[in-house]
Length: 222
Image (cartoon, rainbow, N blue to C red; front, side, top):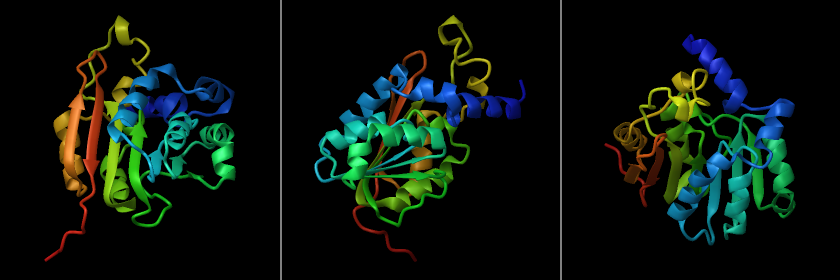
């Protein structure tokens, strides 16, 4: 299977789900995403007073938990209008209270001013980003000083195709943009983050958890 065909299949199946099948599959959030949600919320700890951004917010399951967990406000970015519609339906109360803002867009060009958020999260979507350096640079930009970043993804390289991961191959696996823990740490460093910690749980499809922060004060140049 060619890389371009793999990317097109990934887009239709998961990267940009939509239509009747996409809405049905993602309406309540895939159960396979639960470990990532738990890992992100555990890493964040207290959310009191936080302004949280989620990129790739999908149907808004994690955003709902962030808002009920004490965050004062949140925002979500997704490039699927169908997923944003599901997110709006799930979180209509928070939207009505002006505690949640949703935007249709791309992670490489985020539609928010610099230093808008105190925390940023990404669950089960970073491997869909074809330009991770641009996305990390934007995440660094929109975070306030001392802002935290938590990304839950898959650790690379992916294991060979087997009966245990038949659902991943052949269409999705080769087209996913996964990174080793060392590669992820290097990308976060290049984007300007500090206090970086990247770990993988060692499972058959290893959950990779990347944690980092924006420096408390801007670094002087020159």
